[in-house]
Length: 82
Image (cartoon, rainbow, N blue to C red):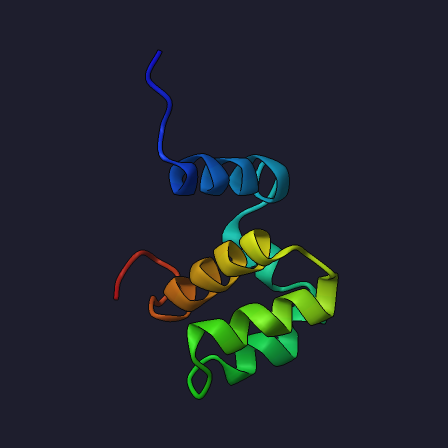
């Protein structure tokens, strides 16, 4: 049986857990993420992941996925345009 790569499975699990009933924008608008999002232009991805871990207590894998999503989301105008 073919199994998808771990990263793809992990990202799918994140989406299923945290983004099932809300958009990425809605998810990131939670008050505990405000300082993380404000610092994205200055922070590297690993610092962003550390901040997610500190704010929410997620494990390393989950915080890295959240950081990646938040950093990509910050690059768009939220209508899908970069």
